[in-house]
Length: 281
Image (cartoon, rainbow, N blue to C red; front, side, top):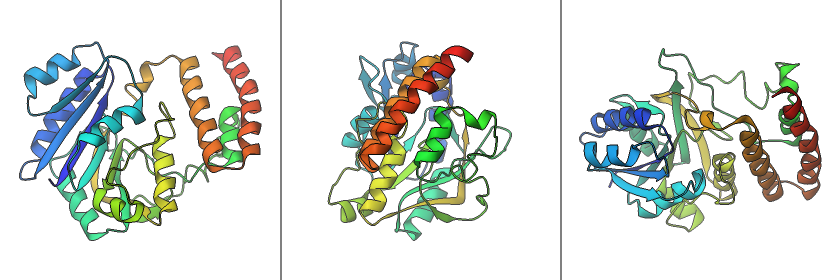
């Protein structure tokens, strides 16, 4: 099997339909499988897949299990040499998958790789990030970029050249290609599972940290491109619940990867951050 594509879906039936239609063209000639894990969408997604895309392997959850756990359900069933974690609100071009696989096979040091992400009009969707640090996450919590727009330029790598392939800290989990054979060699694990302590947010950053911990690399390449409609599922969540998810995941990330005092400091900062949201929401 060349590639297993795993899509975790939640309440984006029409975007998912377009995604699967585009994939059927892009996977022609490849030994591939598509697995959709539906997190209790209750919007007709399951019926749509069963009637229109019977070749898709479908996992139906009775509850919303979050991004990491649902992806792991698909990963455990996958048999491809590569696994692509693909958001439901994405649309590949006919050449996207083949071009990305060709590049990844020529660059085995890239345990994880991502391509150029674009809006429907062709505008760039920036998605390369440095690993989170205390100072930039503190700025996020306190909403300081609203007052100082360039405060996060270093963290967001505002000067990154998306015309050139480069080793990076982390990429957006919307299009997240994993070389399973290389992962098994460096990590000693056949399945590249995400940390299920994260419900949503920070799980792909955490996985990139794991890659570097084991001696692998994460790369961005413009060798392929994909349309990203950006946050169609997450956009349906109300602001306070979004804050809750981001807060919990950020603290778990810092508890795992940074000195303990930093997570404690951020926990205190979140009290003020949540107060700001309550005042201005």
